[in-house]
Length: 280
Image 1 (tube, rainbow, N blue to C red):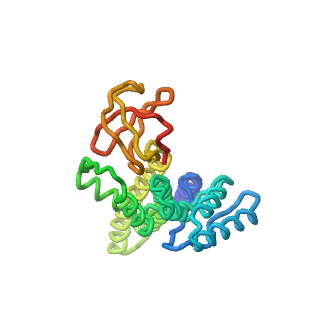
Image 2 (tube, rainbow, N blue to C red; image 1 turned 90 degrees about the vertical axis):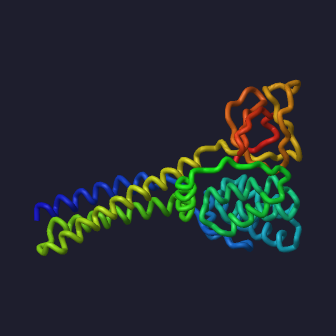
Image 3 (cartoon, rainbow, N blue to C red; image 1 turned 45 degrees about the vertical axis):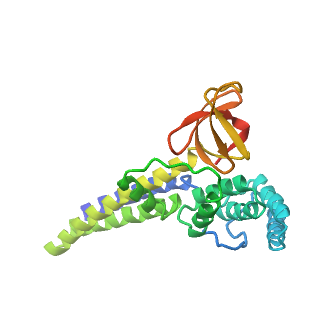
């Protein structure tokens, strides 16, 4: 009985602490559909009716092929403080239909940050990125790193956090079997089950932390201008190193005045004016 009380107390303490951490871990996500959807996951701080009306108006404009009106209304919803994968996804679709390639890729990537496992978002993003002019060879990742990234993208950060809590609870239940069961076979099963659940708990926690870190790391950006020269130094008179076109994704670094240092997928670096890019 003493062992049982100790385990229950430890379980309660850890679950409470873990729950408090998970509350602010990542934005709530909902899978986007390939067509426009009702705003079931959009929650407004105050003016729900206005934003619901804007959402319906934007969807109606999209169905009428009035993409500019749809873009205006979707952006108005964003300006009211809403953030969701579905909203970014629909805005990306409208921008793509209106031939705003850079804005489409920007919003698809923002949607993917909130719902990394959504197949519709990933497919539309790949279609949009295939329309870009720049063909940049990506530095290949180590196969294990690529495999782990693919596995992590199966679930959102929130989902990994919840899974880690479930695994932790299962680990403690197995620990109870190990401590209290009378039969040796049950004790062995409890021990091995506890070990497996703890290992999976560590993996799920690391995936959740990595997803949160990637969401907060606002260093990726998209080229929004039709073409921009990347300079050797933050000066318009500097040497042109190469040219990037609308929709190209890059990594930002140091900033100096109106200039930002950037790195593209093949490792080349340079400087360009900050007004030509927008952070994802």
